[in-house]
Every structure is written in C-alpha cells, then in structure tokens.
Amino acid sequence: MTMMRAAVVREYGGYDRIVIEEAAQPSLKTPKDVILRVLACGLSDIDLLSRQGISGWGLKPLEPPFISGVNVVGEIVEVGDWVSGWREGDRVIVYPSRSCGYCPTCLRGEDTMCHDARIFIEDSCGGLADYCCVPASSLEPLGDHVSLWEAAAIPLAYTTAWRVIKTARLKSSDRVLVLGATDALGSAVLSLTRRFGSFVYAAARGLTNTQALKKLGANRVIDLDRENFEAVVRKETDGYGVDVIVNPLGGSTWLPALRSLTIGGRMVVCGASMGDSPNISIRDLYQSYRQILGVPMGNREDFREVLDLLDRGELKPVVHGTLPLEDTAEGHRLIESGEACGNVIVDVSING
Ligand SMILES: [Zn+2]
Image 1 (spheres, helix red, strand yellow):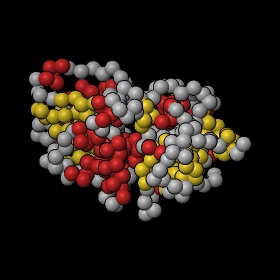
Image 2: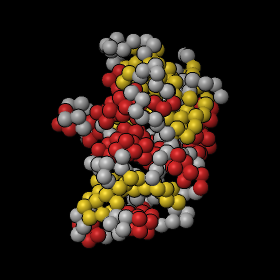
Image 3: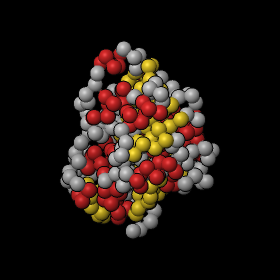
Image 4: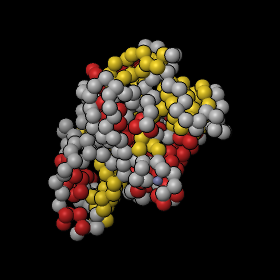
C-alpha cells in the first residue's frame, strides 16, 4: 500500500483535532474517476463545519476519521478506463458539487438545486492530502499561466459570490453594502462587485481588517468597532438607503440591514454565521417592496464563468496567505479568529 500525507479529522472539536498523519493513497473508486496529485487546497467554511460535526450547504455530517478539503487544484496522475478527454499530467480544478444529472433542475443547469446535490467529500476523501480521487465529470482545465493559489480560492467563495451578484441583478448605479467583507465569501463579493462600477460600502471590525478592505477597493469602509452601519448608510445616502445588501452573517444584522435598504432594495443572504433566527419586521419588508434572496452556492455555469474571468486575468482572488499541509490547523484558526482577510490556501505541493 502506497502511503501519503493527509490532514485527518480524528474526532469532532476544535482545530487542534486535525492530525497530520500517513494515510493510504486513494485508488480509483470507479472507472469514471481520476486520481489527482493535489497541488493546492483552499480552506472553506465546509472544512470548519465538518470538523465540528455540523452540516453545511449540501453537506451531511462526516463521520471521523475523515479528510476534508473541497477547493482542490491538482494534476492528474491516473485516469479511469471509462474517462475520455483527460490524461495524466493535465492541470485541473475540481467543481465541488455533485448531483443526479437527470432531474428537471439538473437538466436546466441548476445542479446545486438538485434534491441529490452534495459536496464531493461526502462520497470520498477531500483535497487536504497529497492525493484524492474525484469523478472526471467534475474537472475543469486550468491554464499554466493561472496561479494555483488564486485558483484554489475559486470553487466555493467565488462561484457563490458570482451567483450572489447575479441574483442581486447588480447595476453600475447601485449602491451596495457588503457585510462580513473580510471573510472568503465577503471579500470575493467585494472584488467582483467592483467590476460593475457600483459604489460599495464594506463593513468589518478592527483597523487591520478595515485597512485591508480599503486596499481591496471598497469606496467606503465601515469599522463596526466605531460605527453603526445602519446610521452610516442612512446619513450618507441622504436617508434613501442602499440598493443591495450582501449578508453572510444573519443574526442581529438582519433588522438593521433590512432598514438600510432603499425602497425596492434587495438583500442577498448567503450565510448565517452570527445566528440562524434573526429578528425581522415583516412591515419593514413588504411595505417598502424590499426583497430577501437566498444563495447558498453557485452552479456549474457560475463556476465556469468565474474560471473564465480568472483565465483572462480579469479577476484576482483575495488570498490572505498560504500554508503547508502540516499547518492546516493554523489555517482553520486564522479563519475562525477573523484574522484572515480573504482565502487561506493550503499549498500541498510543499513539505512543511
Ligand atoms: Zn438532479
């Protein structure tokens, strides 16, 4: 049996439960699969949630021991007998969602709305290891000129952020408020929103984070340690409010966010990290023609579109930093503590 390094979650709990150990190198599960040598793996909320035994979007609790890691960039080292169009040495990126492929929602391209939609690590090991096995149908090519680290930020954060922007029907004249703007998804929304020329308010806590948001091009950074975003928006829009709010936080942000929307404004909800049961005024919602729109993830087309932007050099994903596989736990800590601005990438190609 050939062995490899892997970041294994031995039991549910804190990031200290991640153990770097020798594991058996995966073999092809079906003739439709390929084996990848993992080059980089971007950490995501799914890694953090699954480590704690919590289910995330399309993700059932994984039973320890398991290897997570869904933002996978790698090189093909073995190809199943039924696979065509791919060969050893191809540099690829993995689309992390799987679905039935034949239901009405799949057939109209909304694969992540399929009742059978799930993240691939429910069926096999993830990319926080030297090798992983994935279905060839989940692969997209990656050009040699594309940064591995930037590509590893794309599958969850940027695919979802792109769908958030499409769902918001963003226009250049819109004023936008991005909450949670320093996390992987929030920073992705911020960098994509700037393409539209919209005026962007970005909210975060602390000097380091707010300085980072200025560098990312936010027109107005709101430091939540010193300012109240509802008051700032009300004052600086002459009482009208913003057209679009991107809210990955939920919880206590919902009511002030709703009241920060102009008449007919849209709030796109793409997370609930601050709480799942918000206080909300129904009259504040319907009497002002406001809309709340939910987006848990983008679909395959959204994924391909952001990859195309990356390939053409029109998108520069926000990478907080990279770590060797041996420091995967430190990557979890950086995200959980709020120290990371943007994506934390595990560079599996280096030995720590
Ligand atoms: Zn389906």
